[in-house]
Length: 323
Image (cartoon, rainbow, N blue to C red):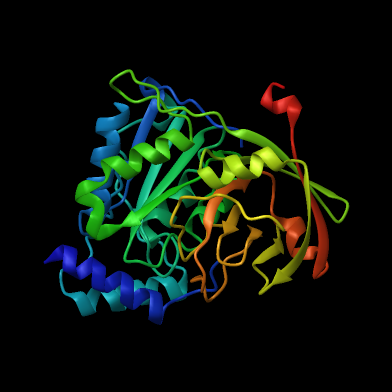
């Protein structure tokens, strides 16, 4: 019943409360890592437990002093009021000392395209200065929204790595997708096997601004890497992205997805374009599938101030790639 409640809650909050939406790899030591999560229905808890099995990191739960009601309509109304007034519900003291950990996996469900208010309560009290944060979330199909960016805003002196998201309905079978994420962020598994992969460091020069990024190990990214350096005429679209034609098709095998995360560097097979996404909008769904090839790791703010048409040069950062 509670799983159904939160799926409905997430959907209703997204439509009734929606806000405008939108690093080199780390090698955390599981002995100094903590999995800290907030879960209402249990979906995020399942993902957190799977993550603990994979990494060996202990679990700790964020709980509100006053539990949310079981009645669906009552939960929706309470969440609406909390969101509209900025109220942060009091939370119970943690069962762990955060000073004992260098890395925090931070898990939560998505409410109204962002973090839930109990997580806002925690982050307003603990900015996790100097720590590495790996956010992960469950949702009802609308993706992480602006939640990962919000975590970074609450924790300006922490290092926030690329986050993980999945459907809450798939949380019982989370391990395979979590393994892929851990590979992207270069985390060793608890069985001693390495999940790391080499990320290729990029320099992207646009309109006199130098951005830094990295490519992943997808087939599209490997094809793109072989063409570097490459210069692309790019056009701004929708206050969220710059895209441009690559000329020659990439041999990509991935299916792609109909959404984006801030900082994504993507390839669209349908129109043979590379894109850099920098801001969520009120319409985060895409009309054509894109394949994530990597991400911009430097601040994205300069992209929002660039003219509509720019020339972007993508090149390998040999100083960081070891060439």
